[in-house]
Length: 357
Image (cartoon, rainbow, N blue to C red):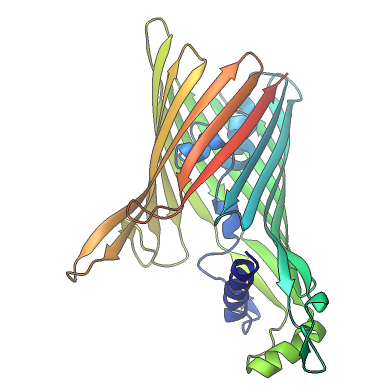
C-alpha cells in the first residue's frame, strides 16, 4: 500500500512540475478533482445533472437548481474510495430556503491521499533506519458558497451562482490557493427542463507556492529542475442540458431521460466533437422511479476514440449504474461508477445520504 501511495505521489509531482516552468499556465486538465461530481445520484447518471438536479447537490451541478428545492433545509453527505482505497473523496453540503424564491447553500469537497511515506531521511550514516520514515497527505479541497433564485424576470426561469475557494497541498512541499465562479440558468416549461451551466466563468486561478528548501536536495540529486512559484488558470467550460419527465399510472411510475453536452475551450480533446476552438462531450442519464420510493439509474459518458491492434479505432465509454431509496425525509443512494472503460473497468462504490427537514 505504501508503494502504491509513493507511486501516486511521483505521478502527482510529475504532472505539477511539468508546468512549473511557466509563470502563467493554462493546462488542459486543471482542478480535475472538481470534475468528478457529487452525490451517488449524479454519479450513477454519469454527471448528466445540469437540468435534473433540484436539491442540495445543485450547488455543484447547477446552482440555479437550488431554487427548486422543496423542503426548507437539506443536508447531503457522500464518501467514495478510488484506486483500491488509496484516494478518498468526501463531500458535504447544506442548503436552506431563505424565502419563497431563493435558496442558499454551502458545500465542501476533499479529494486526498493520506499516509504517503516520506523516505528522504531513510538513510542514517549509510544505514537504513525505518524509524526515520514519516508521512504526509496530499489533498485538493474546495469550498462553495451558492445561491439560486426562481422566477427571475418571468415564471419558470431560475438563475444561480457559486463562489469557489480552492486549496490544494502536497504536504509541506507545495500548496495553492485559488478562487473561481460558476453560474447557471434553468428554464422550466411544463415537464421540460432546459439548462445552461458555466464553470469557471471568469477563469479560475490557482497560485502555486513551493517550499524549495524542502525540495532542493531531492531535486538536485535526481537532476530535476526546482519548481518555481506560478499561477495555474482553469479556462471556462459550458454545459447545456435537457430533460423531460414521463409519468404513468397516475405518476406512480416515471421515466426521466437526461442529456448534457459539456463544451470546453482549452484545445482539442479526445471527444466525439473536437475542433481547434472547442470540444463537446455528451453525457446521457436515465432515472426510473416507482411510487417516489425506489429509483433505478444509469448513465453513459466519457466517449473516446482508442486505437486498436488492427491500426483502427474503437469507441470507449464509461458505464455507470445506481439505485436509490427515499422514505419520508431520508434518501439513501448508491452508485457503481467506472473510472476506466467497458474493456478495462475500474469500478468504485459510491454511497450518499440526503436528509430533508
